Image 1: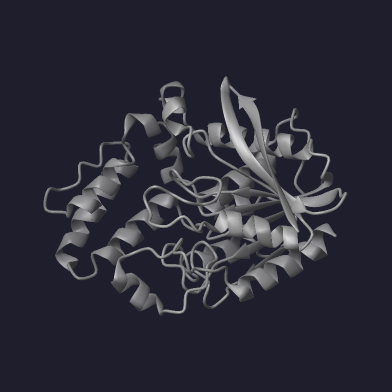
Image 2: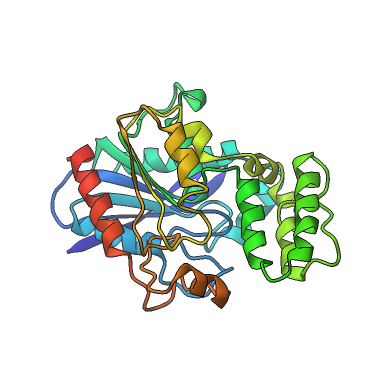
Length: 327
């Protein structure tokens, strides 16, 4: 039986909310901190930008509880049901440090739960969430006031290139049928990288122009410009705790080779870093039976479709690895 409890805490005058899930029993259980991906992705890994509410965050929490682990998943202050009331206080204050502060506060709240063994905590991130976990575990971002270090990291869909490079590669995939537009994407990206407005050309499709403009909305600054230059390979080279990197073969946002190779190079010589590339896992660890080409051609995300399920191969490897590191 799986038990869930809603918890809350204060950070800079804003109430944050999360869900602690754990097995039935006295515990304390080893704990896992789930960190969602980019944008308005909520604690369950649902997003208003994507169809469906069958989020991997909730499914992972339930799978972890079935395997004997407690977990916390939380809404970022700019996601979830309270986002509209939080936005006025967040305007101009969202940053990489602000996301790290959210993660730190969530870890502290989680560690205080009677059901959690605070000496055995792992971070489990997806996409952008991997960057915040790596910062938490990196000596460069060490905080003497941080009370609870993590013992291990699971990084899923982590970018091994800068976020800007990943963004451009995703747009390149979308515009594969219009190669004459690709130089316009490169020019807009170069302007943004140089600290100027991206000013995407009017000949680009509206969704592409909107994607560039999302990096320039006042609400997201200065965070968007910080994020543009972030990649997990830089921080992975500095982290010393055991780390499992998972990139699915059906991930169409992060690439097994283009991102996996730099991450493996950054971990070269590190005995504590493991890599796994489950053949049919997508970006959020769901099983994807279609080919990458079919997924790209569909143009529709099925991440959180009602019938989507976690990839069995990915979960088997992750749970086995956690048993080795936390039990």
